Figure: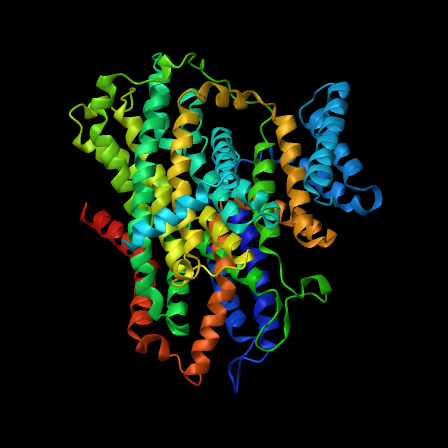
Length: 140
Length: 500
């Protein structure tokens, strides 16, 4: 079924983005006394995006099969990463990064919790030694 | 004479202890990155870019370029020992390299890969040194319309960067153009696509997009597989890594072929080192007396592509430094690095920054010698990197990415954007959208819009200015011709089908 394909959904998302770009660009000046305005360039690439994404949606070309096996692992890792970014302000970089590392080692790679804890603490300590201490770079 | 004087000036700078150290760091890191399948030079350079703001630009450029060409050396190691290319440019090396390793000749394969890389890499730098300055002088006559033509030509290269789908490559480039347009318009002070967020008024930092799409996207893609592949035995002892005299004699043509084909393909923006290595392998097979043995462990089948992908690096820097056109994801990041350090890559780059250009060229000669030394006796040591557990490596990459982004802007909002672009990078890989065109659009988008609007201001809004001036007309025609390549090839295929 076509609506199940990645091309269909990505085409739809890009068509929506193209539509948004065109509608936003129409709100800005296209051509003024001093030449093209802020809406000139976005209008044209917005139209191009809309047109090409519609071609992608309605293309009859057979879609390449996408391997979704394993994607669950990638999405889980991304969610953990996103959560660690979201709590940065709350707990600081070292704690959120150590928890993220623990998750990757213990859950994604199924290593014993002791090993995961050791890696998490070691890597976080390494970051503290290298960045703020040795290089003078502030951690988030 | 001018070239000789420039080169001497470059060596004086590149041989300074600090620059020698950064060159060594760059090539060693490049070798490691090349060896590790799944972590490429664009991701590494993007990750390290924020840290280079603490460095002198010449040292930073020497280090980043070292990563770029060092990775080409390292890429062959996994192709030969693992049958998994460390770099896309080393795909062809798997064909004969892995077969040689299976026959117990891994040492000779690794040795010839290092020697071919050294010879061709040096020829590539020689070509860069001889061609770049005159080409830049030729481009000095450029004004806004010519710059627009140049940018259009650069964006047309997306056709050559397209993977399986040109449509997706074009869409990826358009998303890059949109991202480049986010922020305050410099001509009218109008804020565009900022969704009312103050943080977006100054635009999206290139570093955030590059690290997200390349580094985070690559880590997520690698996390799909829980297990690491097994390597063939790594040869021990210095003597086991040296090819025989007969091997060297057999590879004479392969060294020349790899050097010339690689450089010429590199100069063409968009073609890239993978194409260079494939073409050079094809040429080698076509002229070989034992062409039927290719694919079974022929040493020329390793020397030619490995030479080509190293010589390509020198060629790829020609359009980048003289015209400001990046031909690949890595060179697009190098272009952004130069812009972020306050330089303007293009026709005036060499004349305005002779010491930076010549120190880069000189460091590449030095770096190639370092790589030969690192890759011949020390390849068993580098190959140990393959034993590094992924569960340690990937969190480190994620952490360096977060710290890198935060260090450029001190903004947690940017770290949040990093997570978003990481997901985008992963989905692009999954849905088969090439990511290099996105970076190309992002890097060239702002300059292209500026050049177009300045041109139209010069002509009171008439588009004819773009076609009335000979250089911009030639460039726009070339861009159009490049865009027509897929159409012509489709028509040809259709005609062939009809005839058969």
